Amino acid sequence: MIVAITNTPRPYAWGSSTAIAQLLGTVPSGGPEAELWLGSHPVSPATVVATGEPLAARLPFLLKILAADNPLSLQAHPTASQAQQGFARENEQGVPLDAPHRNYKDPFPKPEIIYALSDKFEALCGFRPVEETRELLLTLGLDDVAARLDALPSLFEWMITRGEGVDELIARVVALTKTQDYTPCASPDGTKGVGLAGDSCVLEVLATARMLAEEYPGDPGIIISLLLNRVTLNRGEALYLPAGNIHAYLRGLGVELMTASDNVLRGGLTPKHIDVPELLRVLDFTTSPVPYLRPEGDVYHPADADFALIRVETDASWSLTGPAVAICVEGHFRVAGANSSTAMQRGDAVYVTADEGALTVSGVGELFLATTV
Image 1 (cartoon, rainbow, N blue to C red):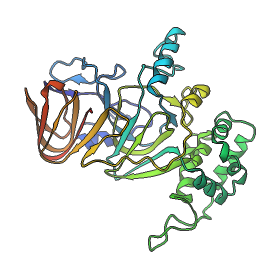
Image 2: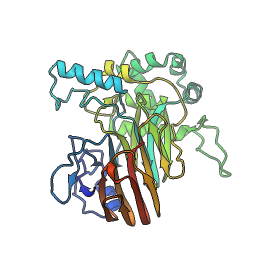
Image 3: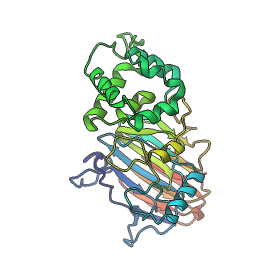
Image 4: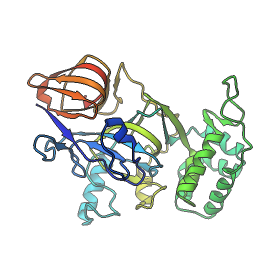
């Protein structure tokens, strides 16, 4: 079975008022349109076009179109066992599912892929390698913070709990963002300037801290951002954010694919609830470079995830091992399985049942297919 589905974008305050509508050829609502959910998660299930009813099937993944005009909260997501235990614990405590202080909305993990649709998609993602961060902090004259990097978990906890001296450090960093004394990211011949820490440009790091300070004055996320990889994805590049990875999308339009979960442990840059002890239990403090996800052909499949995102530009086919969801963002296609077929054009989305078996897509444009592996 292949059925057309639709949904209304989530009106989160950080969303763009135009990007999703421009991508899909829809009429903008006039307010922020942050995320278009194409799945069956009960928070915002897709609607079957023919019946007007919510999609009843339990999909193990959730496909989204995400459009950020402003930074999202710093956040991390749990492992499967952490989600199961946390969900059960809060149920036993009688915490309502819609309570603003609830951490676990479901018993599932939330690893995710983000694929850049805009020319630039900006994000913070994971703790930068220590020596690169040390070089950055020393360049900025933050020697006292650099000296604490070997104890990264305690440094992070000191920052997020506003330990003694944190407010003063935030003020120092905000003052630095107002200076222009650092070499640009690259010299005219394309080589790196001297104001760099590894692959991270000091000017870019300061510009990010300045943006965060303007949006969330005095928030510890301003200084936490100095510890994190700062990345600008070009269109067609992707990240994979596994459980425990601290991240924040800053600006841009993208396709997001994740396990069907809404479990978010926040760590700053938000007026919403922050449970510091639970966040510290969930966070992975392993340092690493930017977690780019390289495709195999046009298939984006993280090694430890049971979902894949497939980008389609022309004729192609796959053998389905489970259900699938597809959305067309450009051109025209025909999607056909063992039992049914349908035409798709810009803005159309469909749900495909696993019994369609071998799925064939023909046409020209750009279509994204999410499925299990």
